[in-house]
Length: 363
Image 1 (cartoon, rainbow, N blue to C red):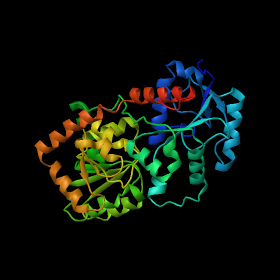
Image 2 (cartoon, one colour):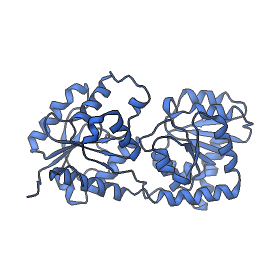
Image 3 (cartoon, rainbow, N blue to C red):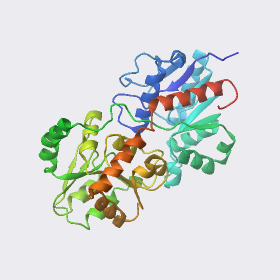
Image 4 (cartoon, helix red, strand yellow):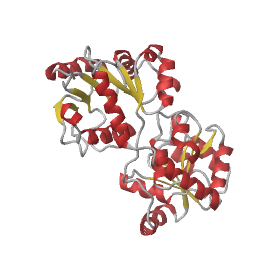
């Protein structure tokens, strides 16, 4: 007999405007689940105003996270209240006794030497220990989870992947002209620009871009960033280089991708690397580090570089100045981006969750 009791999901990354990769992932999954039978079973923990598009789901209001160690009783209280069959953990919160499936986004803190004694990382490992099964965005993240936490290797897991929004597509000529006139000319001097979205500090390795551009004549180059950082200040110190930093809406991100000379993503480690897939979907050539999950996401559609070698980045930029090489990379990128589908992600996770509730622990 099927267990039709509720599934509790924490909306911790779904408050307000979604700007993070984690928040985007859960918004995309839940919007699709809301239109399916599983949506009737979901009880979403609301810790403030939810992101647009999730209004149709049943919610329970709970306080925002204050101290991580106080969360298990809060979560368990809701699970008890609704007689939950399962708790689906989106970001390290977990119940005390209710079975839970944990989405492990990455093992960046463990691989990059973060202070694992901090409450948030202790909470993460408590959630890993408590989970009966796991979901990840990439095969690399699952491999790292099992290597770093050997007990996790004995539990079922699914690589559910990530998707690309249907709104992300190449620009038409009119869109290019409009963005060039209103943004590129006004803020980037009309120059060909390198786009590096998101954070640039730490393991994101924006310093590689600084080191590379410091070695070349930047008279005709600009850099577009979306986050202020120390790397932004260092880039501004490079002679003749124009640097502009501005948060962008989803619609403007598409425009920025579509008009860029290249999107550079030299991270030492990623759990997936959604900007790589999103840039390719917009017809933007991608240069990224050949590390962690980025090899899975980029495939042969991105120029892979050693994130420790500025000369590798310079060589990749030179390659993209060659029309045939650029056209080939753009075409490959569009094909690669089509393999990342949010409907597939939602369906794969749904099958795994329902099978886990059925007691077998995985498909």
